[in-house]
Length: 289
Ligand SMILES: Nc1nc2c(c(=O)[nH]1)N[C@H]1C(S)=C(S)[C@@H](COP(=O)(O)O)O[C@H]1N2
Ligand SMILES: [Mo]
Image (cartoon, rainbow, N blue to C red):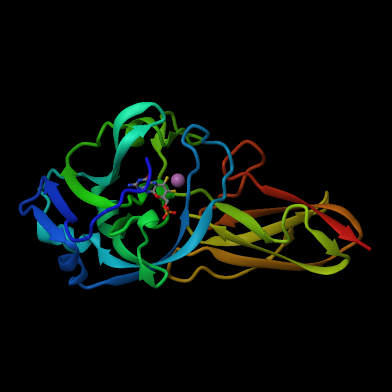
């Protein structure tokens, strides 16, 4: 629905609904609260109309902001509160549906534990396109949950029935009967170098990439042509939900070569073959004599 131009001087964030103390904070009040840093991968789910198409639009981002827990402590949710609704400033027509506002929800305990209200990104104030002046950041979940241009948080005992909560951005996971909202990311990886259709000199080449999942990635394997899966060197994740670098140095003979990578996570999940949004990635390169 486009990038809203938010005036920081008049912007405010409210916390309302099932709370003992409704809050309204302006930017100055938010900046005055104790801030926390968070480094986390940030991955787009892709089009909700094509939930099985691989996108691999991912970054690793350093955020600065206020833990939502601090505001919830002040607001004091009622005992029957179970869900938080996050509402953005942006609204308009979305793919033919008029009067849509950007809205997502999370279980209260997840939001309490994880959500950061970020006002800076990679050491600079949040840019308009990334949610100025304040956005939610939900680590380990698809980007769609990290509501930009945040203006209202509603504490509720129900989930909101809305285009972006119960209609789009839902999918059936293997083993589950009903579609569930897209939240925790899948295990996934992508090749950074070489790139599709690169023209390379024969010899020892370094294959490099990034892997990420809701839990730590514990192994990445690389296969060249019809060869076996070879174990790549993989960085540990550390305490924060960041992506992990992997590398593999190996000899490439002249010719056209197919390179694939696949990640395994601590939960025992592995990237599947074609047909899923986290399918094993495959590129083709040309190696010269
Ligand atoms: N208010 C609002 N928040 C939003 C969106 C949006 O359209 N409006 N898009 C979501 C989606 S689908 C993604 S992938 C991320 C993208 O965040 P970025 O632009 O900082 O990469 O923002 C999410 N938050
Ligand atoms: Mo997205």
